[in-house]
Length: 353
Figure 1 (tube, rainbow, N blue to C red):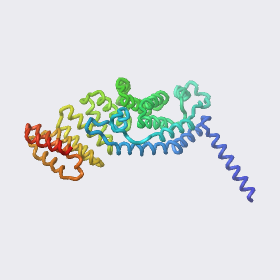
Figure 2: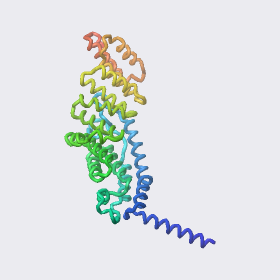
Figure 3: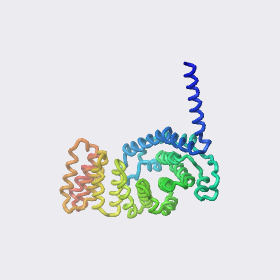
Figure 4: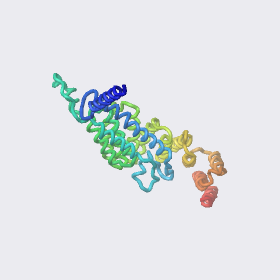
Protein backbone atom coordinates (compact mmCIF):
# COMPACT_ATOMS: atom_id res chain seq x y z
CA UNK A 1 0.00 0.00 0.00
CA UNK A 2 2.76 2.42 0.96
CA UNK A 3 4.53 1.55 -2.27
CA UNK A 4 1.46 2.48 -4.27
CA UNK A 5 1.10 5.79 -2.41
CA UNK A 6 4.74 6.65 -3.02
CA UNK A 7 4.39 5.73 -6.66
CA UNK A 8 1.26 7.89 -6.95
CA UNK A 9 2.99 10.81 -5.23
CA UNK A 10 5.99 10.46 -7.53
CA UNK A 11 3.73 10.51 -10.57
CA UNK A 12 1.99 13.65 -9.26
CA UNK A 13 5.33 15.40 -8.64
CA UNK A 14 6.57 14.45 -12.10
CA UNK A 15 3.32 15.75 -13.60
CA UNK A 16 3.65 19.07 -11.75
CA UNK A 17 7.27 19.45 -12.84
CA UNK A 18 6.27 18.70 -16.39
CA UNK A 19 3.44 21.21 -16.21
CA UNK A 20 5.72 23.93 -14.82
CA UNK A 21 8.41 23.23 -17.38
CA UNK A 22 5.78 23.42 -20.09
CA UNK A 23 4.95 26.91 -18.79
CA UNK A 24 8.57 28.08 -18.89
CA UNK A 25 9.11 31.68 -20.12
CA UNK A 26 11.40 30.12 -22.73
CA UNK A 27 8.24 28.89 -24.45
CA UNK A 28 5.48 31.07 -25.88
CA UNK A 29 2.03 29.52 -25.89
CA UNK A 30 -1.31 30.69 -24.51
CA UNK A 31 -0.67 28.52 -21.45
CA UNK A 32 2.82 29.92 -20.78
CA UNK A 33 1.64 33.51 -21.25
CA UNK A 34 -1.25 33.09 -18.82
CA UNK A 35 0.87 31.20 -16.30
CA UNK A 36 3.73 33.73 -16.34
CA UNK A 37 1.26 36.62 -16.05
CA UNK A 38 -0.37 34.97 -13.02
CA UNK A 39 2.97 34.27 -11.30
CA UNK A 40 4.24 37.78 -12.06
CA UNK A 41 1.16 39.39 -10.60
CA UNK A 42 0.67 37.38 -7.42
CA UNK A 43 4.11 35.99 -6.63
CA UNK A 44 6.33 39.03 -7.24
CA UNK A 45 4.50 42.21 -8.25
CA UNK A 46 1.93 42.20 -5.43
CA UNK A 47 4.53 42.42 -2.65
CA UNK A 48 6.50 45.11 -4.45
CA UNK A 49 3.36 47.15 -5.13
CA UNK A 50 2.20 46.94 -1.50
CA UNK A 51 5.63 48.09 -0.31
CA UNK A 52 5.54 50.95 -2.84
CA UNK A 53 2.12 52.19 -1.69
CA UNK A 54 2.97 52.00 2.01
CA UNK A 55 6.33 53.77 1.57
CA UNK A 56 4.82 56.53 -0.59
CA UNK A 57 1.99 57.11 1.89
CA UNK A 58 4.48 57.48 4.75
CA UNK A 59 6.74 59.79 2.70
CA UNK A 60 3.84 62.13 1.98
CA UNK A 61 2.60 62.03 5.58
CA UNK A 62 5.90 62.47 7.43
CA UNK A 63 7.56 65.13 5.27
CA UNK A 64 7.92 68.53 6.95
CA UNK A 65 7.51 71.20 4.29
CA UNK A 66 9.56 74.38 4.45
CA UNK A 67 6.81 76.99 4.82
CA UNK A 68 9.34 79.84 4.77
CA UNK A 69 9.75 79.19 1.05
CA UNK A 70 7.47 78.06 -1.78
CA UNK A 71 6.47 74.50 -0.93
CA UNK A 72 7.27 71.66 -3.29
CA UNK A 73 4.70 69.91 -5.44
CA UNK A 74 5.78 66.67 -3.78
CA UNK A 75 8.36 65.76 -1.10
CA UNK A 76 10.36 63.66 -3.58
CA UNK A 77 11.39 66.84 -5.42
CA UNK A 78 13.56 67.76 -2.42
CA UNK A 79 16.10 65.20 -3.66
CA UNK A 80 17.15 67.68 -6.35
CA UNK A 81 17.84 70.34 -3.69
CA UNK A 82 20.22 69.17 -0.92
CA UNK A 83 19.44 72.33 1.11
CA UNK A 84 15.76 71.43 1.40
CA UNK A 85 14.41 69.06 4.09
CA UNK A 86 14.90 65.57 2.71
CA UNK A 87 12.09 62.98 2.51
CA UNK A 88 12.18 59.59 4.21
CA UNK A 89 11.56 56.14 2.79
CA UNK A 90 13.34 53.78 0.43
CA UNK A 91 11.71 52.19 -2.62
CA UNK A 92 14.63 49.85 -3.26
CA UNK A 93 12.62 46.76 -2.32
CA UNK A 94 9.98 47.60 -4.94
CA UNK A 95 12.72 48.12 -7.54
CA UNK A 96 14.19 44.71 -6.68
CA UNK A 97 10.77 43.05 -6.99
CA UNK A 98 10.25 44.64 -10.39
CA UNK A 99 13.69 43.55 -11.56
CA UNK A 100 13.02 40.01 -10.35
CA UNK A 101 9.71 39.89 -12.23
CA UNK A 102 11.38 41.07 -15.42
CA UNK A 103 14.35 38.71 -15.13
CA UNK A 104 12.33 35.59 -14.28
CA UNK A 105 9.06 36.04 -16.12
CA UNK A 106 9.75 37.96 -19.31
CA UNK A 107 8.69 36.07 -22.46
CA UNK A 108 10.84 37.19 -25.38
CA UNK A 109 10.54 34.11 -27.56
CA UNK A 110 8.17 34.66 -30.47
CA UNK A 111 5.16 32.33 -30.77
CA UNK A 112 5.05 29.62 -33.40
CA UNK A 113 3.62 31.03 -36.63
CA UNK A 114 0.08 30.01 -37.49
CA UNK A 115 -0.51 29.01 -41.08
CA UNK A 116 -2.91 31.19 -43.03
CA UNK A 117 -2.24 34.38 -41.03
CA UNK A 118 0.75 35.73 -42.96
CA UNK A 119 -1.31 38.52 -44.57
CA UNK A 120 -3.10 39.61 -41.39
CA UNK A 121 -1.74 43.06 -40.33
CA UNK A 122 -2.70 42.57 -36.67
CA UNK A 123 -1.02 39.18 -36.61
CA UNK A 124 2.14 40.72 -38.07
CA UNK A 125 2.12 43.33 -35.29
CA UNK A 126 1.63 40.57 -32.72
CA UNK A 127 4.74 38.77 -34.02
CA UNK A 128 6.82 41.95 -33.74
CA UNK A 129 6.17 42.51 -30.04
CA UNK A 130 9.14 42.80 -27.68
CA UNK A 131 7.29 41.18 -24.76
CA UNK A 132 4.61 38.49 -24.56
CA UNK A 133 3.94 38.32 -20.81
CA UNK A 134 0.64 40.28 -20.74
CA UNK A 135 1.23 41.58 -17.20
CA UNK A 136 4.91 42.48 -17.30
CA UNK A 137 4.39 46.12 -18.28
CA UNK A 138 3.09 46.65 -14.74
CA UNK A 139 6.44 45.51 -13.32
CA UNK A 140 8.25 47.93 -15.62
CA UNK A 141 5.97 50.78 -14.51
CA UNK A 142 6.52 49.89 -10.85
CA UNK A 143 10.27 49.99 -11.40
CA UNK A 144 10.10 53.42 -13.05
CA UNK A 145 7.87 54.91 -10.34
CA UNK A 146 10.06 53.42 -7.60
CA UNK A 147 13.19 54.88 -9.19
CA UNK A 148 11.45 58.27 -9.38
CA UNK A 149 10.38 58.28 -5.73
CA UNK A 150 13.83 57.05 -4.72
CA UNK A 151 15.23 60.27 -6.21
CA UNK A 152 16.79 58.57 -9.24
CA UNK A 153 15.08 60.87 -11.73
CA UNK A 154 17.43 60.12 -14.62
CA UNK A 155 17.09 56.37 -14.12
CA UNK A 156 13.32 56.73 -13.96
CA UNK A 157 13.24 58.79 -17.17
CA UNK A 158 15.25 56.08 -18.94
CA UNK A 159 12.90 53.34 -17.71
CA UNK A 160 9.79 55.23 -18.82
CA UNK A 161 11.39 55.94 -22.19
CA UNK A 162 11.98 52.19 -22.60
CA UNK A 163 8.35 51.43 -21.72
CA UNK A 164 6.99 53.96 -24.22
CA UNK A 165 9.28 52.52 -26.88
CA UNK A 166 8.65 48.80 -26.31
CA UNK A 167 4.98 48.53 -25.31
CA UNK A 168 3.40 50.30 -28.27
CA UNK A 169 0.38 47.95 -28.33
CA UNK A 170 -0.69 49.32 -24.92
CA UNK A 171 -1.65 52.97 -25.65
CA UNK A 172 -2.68 53.80 -22.06
CA UNK A 173 0.60 52.43 -20.72
CA UNK A 174 2.57 54.39 -23.32
CA UNK A 175 0.75 57.64 -22.42
CA UNK A 176 1.32 57.04 -18.71
CA UNK A 177 5.01 56.28 -19.28
CA UNK A 178 5.44 59.47 -21.31
CA UNK A 179 3.80 61.55 -18.57
CA UNK A 180 6.08 59.99 -15.94
CA UNK A 181 9.04 60.64 -18.22
CA UNK A 182 8.02 64.32 -18.42
CA UNK A 183 7.57 64.41 -14.64
CA UNK A 184 11.06 62.97 -14.21
CA UNK A 185 12.45 65.64 -16.54
CA UNK A 186 10.71 68.33 -14.46
CA UNK A 187 12.41 66.99 -11.34
CA UNK A 188 15.73 67.31 -13.19
CA UNK A 189 14.75 70.83 -14.34
CA UNK A 190 14.97 69.68 -17.95
CA UNK A 191 11.99 71.83 -18.83
CA UNK A 192 12.47 71.85 -22.60
CA UNK A 193 12.48 68.05 -22.69
CA UNK A 194 9.41 67.92 -20.41
CA UNK A 195 7.47 70.39 -22.55
CA UNK A 196 8.35 68.50 -25.75
CA UNK A 197 6.53 65.47 -24.34
CA UNK A 198 3.61 67.31 -22.75
CA UNK A 199 2.56 69.30 -25.83
CA UNK A 200 2.29 66.07 -27.85
CA UNK A 201 -0.19 64.45 -25.48
CA UNK A 202 -3.75 65.09 -26.65
CA UNK A 203 -6.88 65.24 -24.44
CA UNK A 204 -8.37 62.12 -26.03
CA UNK A 205 -5.33 60.14 -24.82
CA UNK A 206 -6.27 60.84 -21.19
CA UNK A 207 -8.69 57.93 -20.98
CA UNK A 208 -8.63 57.36 -17.21
CA UNK A 209 -8.66 59.40 -14.01
CA UNK A 210 -5.11 58.21 -13.30
CA UNK A 211 -3.87 59.68 -16.58
CA UNK A 212 -5.79 62.92 -16.02
CA UNK A 213 -4.34 63.23 -12.53
CA UNK A 214 -0.79 62.63 -13.76
CA UNK A 215 -1.26 65.05 -16.67
CA UNK A 216 -2.56 67.92 -14.50
CA UNK A 217 0.10 67.37 -11.83
CA UNK A 218 2.96 67.23 -14.33
CA UNK A 219 1.77 70.28 -16.27
CA UNK A 220 1.31 72.23 -13.01
CA UNK A 221 4.82 71.23 -11.96
CA UNK A 222 6.17 72.33 -15.34
CA UNK A 223 4.53 75.77 -15.11
CA UNK A 224 5.58 76.25 -11.47
CA UNK A 225 9.18 75.52 -12.41
CA UNK A 226 8.84 77.83 -15.43
CA UNK A 227 7.69 80.61 -13.05
CA UNK A 228 4.45 80.95 -15.02
CA UNK A 229 2.02 81.11 -12.09
CA UNK A 230 -0.94 82.22 -14.20
CA UNK A 231 -0.83 78.97 -16.19
CA UNK A 232 0.19 76.86 -13.20
CA UNK A 233 -2.86 77.83 -11.12
CA UNK A 234 -5.62 76.18 -13.23
CA UNK A 235 -3.55 73.00 -13.66
CA UNK A 236 -2.79 72.94 -9.92
CA UNK A 237 -6.46 73.35 -9.07
CA UNK A 238 -7.22 70.41 -11.31
CA UNK A 239 -4.48 68.33 -9.66
CA UNK A 240 -5.89 69.17 -6.21
CA UNK A 241 -9.19 67.63 -7.28
CA UNK A 242 -7.48 64.26 -7.70
CA UNK A 243 -5.19 64.47 -4.65
CA UNK A 244 -5.99 63.27 -1.13
CA UNK A 245 -4.55 63.30 2.37
CA UNK A 246 -1.36 65.25 3.10
CA UNK A 247 -0.69 65.68 -0.60
CA UNK A 248 -3.99 67.52 -1.10
CA UNK A 249 -3.11 69.82 1.83
CA UNK A 250 0.35 70.46 0.40
CA UNK A 251 -1.01 71.43 -3.02
CA UNK A 252 -3.64 73.72 -1.46
CA UNK A 253 -0.93 75.54 0.45
CA UNK A 254 1.10 75.92 -2.73
CA UNK A 255 -2.00 77.23 -4.51
CA UNK A 256 -2.30 79.92 -1.85
CA UNK A 257 1.32 80.90 -2.45
CA UNK A 258 0.78 81.14 -6.20
CA UNK A 259 -2.37 83.24 -5.81
CA UNK A 260 -0.49 85.50 -3.41
CA UNK A 261 2.38 85.89 -5.87
CA UNK A 262 -0.14 86.84 -8.55
CA UNK A 263 -1.70 89.47 -6.30
CA UNK A 264 -5.04 87.67 -5.86
CA UNK A 265 -5.23 88.05 -2.08
CA UNK A 266 -8.83 86.87 -1.63
CA UNK A 267 -8.19 83.63 -3.57
CA UNK A 268 -4.96 83.13 -1.61
CA UNK A 269 -6.80 83.63 1.70
CA UNK A 270 -9.36 80.96 0.72
CA UNK A 271 -6.69 78.50 -0.44
CA UNK A 272 -4.79 78.87 2.84
CA UNK A 273 -8.06 78.46 4.76
CA UNK A 274 -8.75 75.17 2.99
CA UNK A 275 -5.17 73.99 3.58
CA UNK A 276 -5.52 74.70 7.30
CA UNK A 277 -8.90 72.98 7.49
CA UNK A 278 -7.86 69.90 5.52
CA UNK A 279 -8.64 66.63 7.25
CA UNK A 280 -5.51 65.15 8.76
CA UNK A 281 -3.43 68.32 8.40
CA UNK A 282 -0.71 68.52 11.07
CA UNK A 283 -0.83 71.35 13.60
CA UNK A 284 2.36 72.75 12.09
CA UNK A 285 0.59 72.98 8.73
CA UNK A 286 -2.54 74.52 10.28
CA UNK A 287 -0.46 77.11 12.08
CA UNK A 288 1.48 78.17 9.01
CA UNK A 289 -1.68 78.29 6.91
CA UNK A 290 -3.28 80.60 9.51
CA UNK A 291 -0.26 82.90 9.53
CA UNK A 292 -0.30 83.02 5.73
CA UNK A 293 -3.99 83.94 5.82
CA UNK A 294 -3.18 86.99 7.92
CA UNK A 295 -0.57 88.06 5.37
CA UNK A 296 -3.15 88.29 2.59
CA UNK A 297 -6.08 89.58 4.65
CA UNK A 298 -7.90 92.30 2.72
CA UNK A 299 -10.80 93.24 5.03
CA UNK A 300 -11.30 96.88 5.96
CA UNK A 301 -11.37 96.09 9.67
CA UNK A 302 -8.29 94.17 10.86
CA UNK A 303 -9.60 94.01 14.45
CA UNK A 304 -11.08 90.49 14.29
CA UNK A 305 -7.99 89.19 12.48
CA UNK A 306 -5.66 90.70 15.11
CA UNK A 307 -7.75 89.25 17.95
CA UNK A 308 -7.70 85.80 16.34
CA UNK A 309 -3.90 85.92 16.19
CA UNK A 310 -3.63 87.27 19.74
CA UNK A 311 -5.70 84.32 20.99
CA UNK A 312 -3.13 82.01 19.45
CA UNK A 313 -0.44 83.44 21.76
CA UNK A 314 -2.25 82.00 24.79
CA UNK A 315 -1.93 78.37 23.74
CA UNK A 316 0.97 76.35 25.15
CA UNK A 317 1.50 74.58 21.85
CA UNK A 318 2.30 77.94 20.24
CA UNK A 319 5.14 78.86 22.60
CA UNK A 320 7.77 78.10 19.99
CA UNK A 321 5.83 80.12 17.38
CA UNK A 322 5.23 83.34 19.35
CA UNK A 323 7.74 85.35 17.29
CA UNK A 324 5.88 84.45 14.09
CA UNK A 325 2.51 85.37 15.56
CA UNK A 326 3.62 88.80 16.78
CA UNK A 327 5.42 89.42 13.50
CA UNK A 328 2.20 88.61 11.61
CA UNK A 329 0.24 91.02 13.85
CA UNK A 330 2.86 93.69 13.20
CA UNK A 331 2.48 93.17 9.47
CA UNK A 332 -1.27 93.59 9.72
CA UNK A 333 -0.89 96.92 11.51
CA UNK A 334 1.80 98.05 9.09
CA UNK A 335 -0.46 97.22 6.10
CA UNK A 336 -2.90 99.77 7.55
CA UNK A 337 -0.09 102.26 8.26
CA UNK A 338 -0.49 101.94 12.04
CA UNK A 339 3.26 102.16 12.66
CA UNK A 340 3.01 102.46 16.45
CA UNK A 341 1.22 99.13 16.89
CA UNK A 342 3.34 97.58 14.16
CA UNK A 343 6.60 98.47 15.94
CA UNK A 344 5.24 97.31 19.31
CA UNK A 345 4.49 93.87 17.88
CA UNK A 346 7.80 93.67 16.00
CA UNK A 347 9.54 94.30 19.34
CA UNK A 348 7.56 91.46 20.93
CA UNK A 349 8.46 89.24 17.97
CA UNK A 350 12.15 90.00 18.51
CA UNK A 351 11.87 89.28 22.24
CA UNK A 352 10.15 85.93 21.67
CA UNK A 353 12.48 84.76 18.91
